[in-house]
Amino acid sequence: PQTNLFLQGRNHQTAIPRGLTAIRTLQEAGVLVAAGADNVQDPFNPVGRSDPLETAALMVMAGHQLPDIAYEMVSNDARECIGLLRVDVAVGAPADLLVIDATSIRHAMADAPLSRRVYHNGLLVASANQQTVVHRTE
Image (cartoon, rainbow, N blue to C red):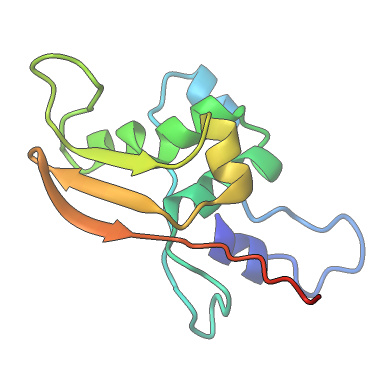
């Protein structure tokens, strides 16, 4: 949604179009709707981070989705759209996980913590750590 929100409606003075399709109408019709990002820091989207949490947050704000549904759109729904199995934390499920330092999906979208662990087939394949330091001035 990020690139379309940036590009569409730029020259409209009133009734600016949103740059998104009719997401809820498609969902209610049974269409699987996923969300993703492209055009990362290029002329079409100068601020994109290619972060699924950012895309999910945009789906909440611009697409009027609830946080849990928006997260499904960038995770399991996106996996299904490209032919991958949906995942869950359950016995027998693919061990493809994103571990985020957050208390809820909403919190993860709101704070977009940088500390993350990515597991594929049960193996840690990527990690990032965020450190916050408060320095006293006295």
